[in-house]
Length: 132
Image 1 (cartoon, rainbow, N blue to C red):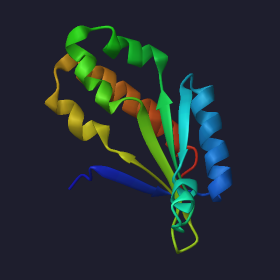
Image 2 (image 1 turned 180 degrees about the horizontal axis):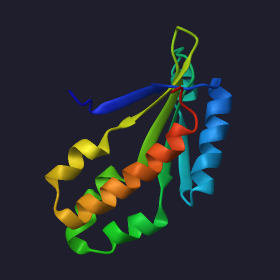
Image 3 (image 1 turned 30 degrees about the horizontal axis):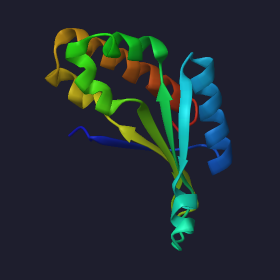
């Protein structure tokens, strides 16, 4: 059965995973919009957790294809794409993301195509850092 959330083990340390993934995103023509440091957020609330960063990334080309049509603006709630990088208590670093390919078939053909292309591009970035 296909999973809605995908988790893959990184072949790098937490910081190296962040660096390598950031480079892959930028080299792929996408933009890193924002990085949420959830470990820092928890620390400000007197809670201690292992490192967790959530990257918000965007392809201006694909985003424009969706945001340029009034009838598709509802999909903006799924934008930008997100990838999480985190450590677990086993000492390893992991990468997780939503499996957008599960949602795409529920949409009309044209937006389904945009989502599938975006998903494939993001998978290409992630494939550079995960263990095979």
